[in-house]
Image (cartoon, rainbow, N blue to C red; front, side, top):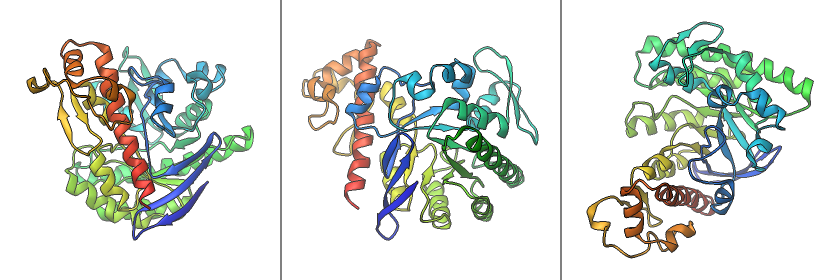
Length: 355
């Protein structure tokens, strides 16, 4: 469970205990979508001091399937990672990928088609809890409806009501699984409500009445601007219990993370640092960034980042990384991603040390 060790006016430092070890907060979760990160090994992640991984229920359900993972001994054994794992519920992916095909939301869950082959699937609270328990994650998420933050109020109201009904069902199903199996994953509720503060407040209060091990703020970083996002975080975080971890889903910009830690958030995840790395945007340990594919770096034979947490960026030059990415060499993506992930994780360590 969660122990709050220290807190400033709003920023917090704590320890989250799971079945596969403890995690110091605030922390960032690298996203190993289908149990892996592009071009980065589990050993690399340990070198960069990653404490916990996020894996995706939707993708693992479609391929290779939760039955295969369970027969392999669970997700930790399957992917070779001994530290904690969080699985999301699959809800966000169901709705986002649904834009590409047929998606039908009912009171029981969501009918959708696989983005891989078009096959029909269904996930609701029961299915999401079943998949996540079979995967064997340390932290699992309730199945929720995630509309864009800029959607019409009527749509957001319906999503909040459905999210609350599904959260109550997920809690009941999870309790039954725990009793049957003896396994004890932490279950997090998700606060939805778009940019509507009263709906966020309603969702936060009713989730707490159900009771969860932690609380996430969902439905942000999906269309609103930074000022709007920070405004929602500032309004919602104080409504959440002080003795439970607070998780802002889908935010990975280092400066935004700093701002949200100051507003009381403990947990973050995003594919953003890795995605921008593959396209040539490199985060540096001095909190600046460069566009390594620009012509000015063709003859820059200095180290990529002499203070980098990644040995690859201390070893290799900017001109070499410029060449690799321009030549579409996979090693370039690995070097760039290790750099950005390393800087992001290092920034979390600095935030923990400052409290």
